[in-house]
Image 1 (cartoon, rainbow, N blue to C red):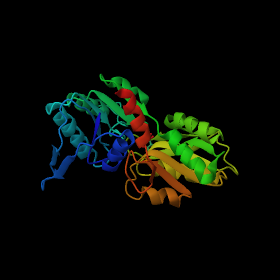
Image 2: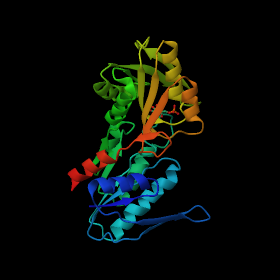
Image 3: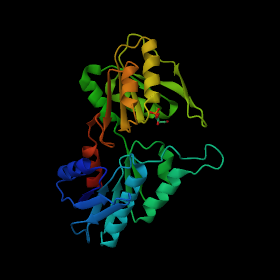
Length: 292
Ligand code: R5P
């Protein structure tokens, strides 16, 4: 196997190759003055199993297209197989028609990935596990939550309460609690599908006097985490840390969360960011080793 780091995940790609002890395929990329993307493989891939590492965080459409250009080209150049490692899968939150007439965007994205010749797909903490069943190629979602929880533990928060900021994150809080050992709880969240506004409240969370770690798949605008932090602080929580797999951190997300009383926000390099302190490279390498 050889690794082709895409423009969105260069450091992560090199790290994975180092952990696997395999060659890196150098990929030249640039953006034309009109915004179009250019991709060129500088090393041969003929007869190789190629692992393309390319996340699809903002600019999502550009990063997605670059993934498609890479996989299609690797196949045209004679790659034996292509594994697409897409640590953050864009559009996964639009996985159904919430309002009549909406695009089910993730289905379109899956169709494009498959049409580009990808043989196997790997991602992290996908927004909803049922999305994996919509692929007709083998597709898997690994979890970075145990590694994030381990990092939280080393910050002196062993025994902290693990909290899910909404129902969809309950599985994440449970997985984190296995590491932190302080039990888990969750909050209710409702989103107005038209305005996008959220309403949140505590659901059986006994936070008084406790250290708390909140776990979510994505931090985008920071609205969910900021609201969760202030509710927990009002309920008497001591230290509150926030952890997510995909730190998209749109606009002032980080200062919103810290301003709400959070002590630290951490994330992974599924999305490169100033708070990506946990690397998923080891987990990717382990999985790729199993594949070949
Ligand atoms: C939604 O259900 C996700 O799990 C996240 O909670 C959400 O995407 C976070 O978005 P934001 O940071 O904009 O509140």
